[in-house]
Amino acid sequence: MAVTVKDIKALMELTGVGMMDCKRALVETDNDQEKAIEILREKGLATQAKKSGRTAAEGLVVALVKGNVGALVEVNTETDFAANTDDFKKFANAVAETIIEANPADVEALKACTISGGDATVDATLTELAGMKIRENIQIRRFVRLEGVLASYVHNGGSIGVLVKLDTELDADKVAYIGKDVAMQSAALNPAYMCREQVPAEVLENEKEIMLKQMAEDPKMAKKPEQVKVKIVEGKVGKYYSENCLLEQAFVKDDKVSVQGYVDAEAKKLGGTISVVDVVRFERGEGIEKQDDNLADEVASMMKK
Image (cartoon, rainbow, N blue to C red; front, side, top):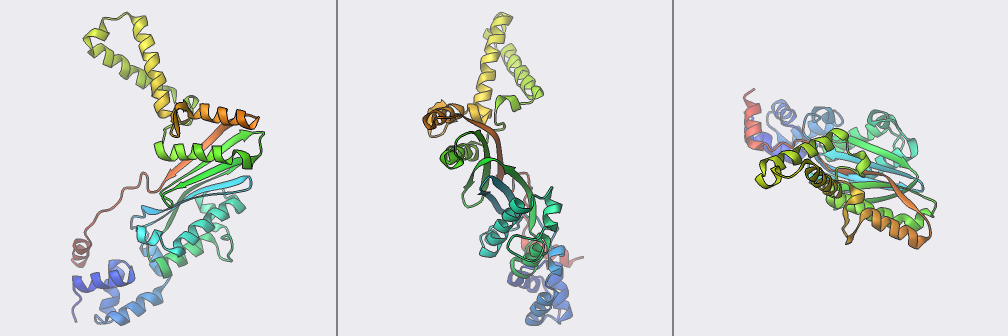
């Protein structure tokens, strides 16, 4: 019996397996869908490698703090449906636990670690999850691990995660709410830098050049003395800092003070000092080009090959 595009599409939707695997299984079983499903199930773990070319831009960002160690990790999969399953969430959280416990150097080293709470490696667990349960391409994209006085915030069930490190002599539990507020600010406004010291000199010079060119194009501004133009540029640079540097932004809970002003005021109330020394923000799928292919057209195209 001839295998049609409709047959392949139906098997793909039932199994979550790639089109060429579905086509081969149907050809092998003379278009018997039940037998084709059995063959695909028997292949099990082999399906993960064949799915690796499919875009994984959904998933979860997990932020986890245990004592004085924290981890922020992005684990991607192809669909938000898969990302919301208990199996996927359990895996992503176990990966974060593993990062805290094993302190791997990079993603490849992380994959070789025994997963927290299990006997297999992270990579083997990922492969089994992708091949037997989720049936989608799964990737551990990136992670950071910090030590010290930490706070975290996860937005919208894992679409954004932020990890904040504070330097303070105060008890970590007492300052946790301050770190979380800073993390929430970062999640909401996504500033390019934590503080003005982090702004690269070339970025600042480029901004100044743009400002000067804008004044040169304005007849009223072009006639002003150079020293006046310099002062105007300095004022605009200050505005650039307040818009692009986290600690100089207006605090979202009280826009009458900056984030730094809020931190200083809360530290004073607690009888100590607090410095924000590191802020790491991950947004799920940022920088990944998502595919928007029509499934039927894709299958039809593959059938011609």
